[in-house]
Image (cartoon, rainbow, N blue to C red):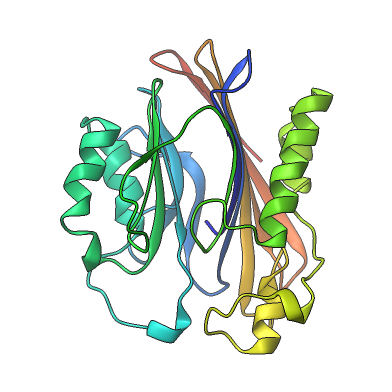
Length: 262
């Protein structure tokens, strides 16, 4: 994922309210949101086998964004998508998982990782000296820099989520569309992540298209209710042909699972 806005443990009905955009090369193959053989719900990267965001019906959540640092490109053997997959499919506590990961996180390209369960949500980046951070109740934003780095598209995504919550609008499609702005940042306020000036401008939008070969390939909205009910919707975009397809899963933690796709 490359842009997340989420409200954690700060609503009387919802434990987690999250909206996310994933940006990727259009040619990279992936499978839409579905239940894996291991029981987790997530999309799947068909090249490396991992995922970027998902939930285990036992009450485990994880999401990942890449940390963009094109000035220091290196080749890493390990795939960042495994960081989400391994937590979701495991049984170790979120904090213990990250403690174990700290010893080997230098073996991965730059990442921001969220892992949590019904009690706690934690954040870790291998580009920060802060270490493991337990997130207090509140609304947060995360993109391709450290948590809460105030890029304009992140601030707008966080504000949109707050507006939806205040209005009581928890329609999954509406939540996603609130994070689809194509407005770009002014050149004098752009970060320098190693992309060309022209690319930095295009990457500053919430909904991205860079040269019709890289951009926003899907969006996800997730609602995790305090009573254990979970709704997840993913919209996959074919920006070349101007089409999209949706899939949705509904389940209850430790309960009966229902799935719909369209």
